[in-house]
Amino acid sequence: MPHLVGGALKPLDFSALVGPDEPDHPPRILLLYGSLRDTSYSRATAEEGARVLRALGCETKFFDPSGLPLPDDAPADHPKVAELRDLVMWSEGMVWSSPERHGAMTGIMKTQIDWIPLSPIGGVRPTQGKTLAVMQVSGGSQSFNAVNQMRILGRWMRMVTIPNQSSVPMAWKEFDDGRMKPSSLYNRIVDVMEELARFTVMTRGRKDMLVDRYSERVETLEDVHKRVNR
Image (cartoon, rainbow, N blue to C red):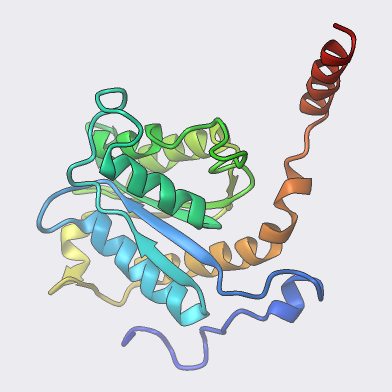
């Protein structure tokens, strides 16, 4: 981590973020990226983020989208689909990092998200109440189309999408031998990862309460009433 200023990046202070009975294991963060190129700047950006997350005390995992079928073009027990869903279930927070292509996130990024169901798996919703950070890279001038689209998807997936985000313009100028150069753009990625880690620690033990909805409780009561009064 040669670009970090010594002492400026502080490890997570669990005592300041959670109560005494909250989970204290390392936050589990899954990182998804939206390009299959050998030189993938969305993957390289996600890798920089993962290094920061690990320095903060998080556990990180990546999903390689190569070989993932199109949505509905394979059964849910396809090996790549099952791998993705297992990782999502493992995670407590996620990072989505996509290139912007034709003014939008890539189909590769959207395909991964589309394979994550809204309905419960084994009684547990895969994404509801989990945290999310969004990042994008562009070949040209700075844009926010992809991160804005991913924010919409994060809300639709009932995720807690953090306020901060990263957009890296002319990404090919920002990397040297696979590592990001020091810059304000790199510092923004550090900011985003810090915020994601803190939000994950603060919310993961409370996510069931945070997403408890009146409309769903009413529906559940009606279902019980119908069963009892058949």
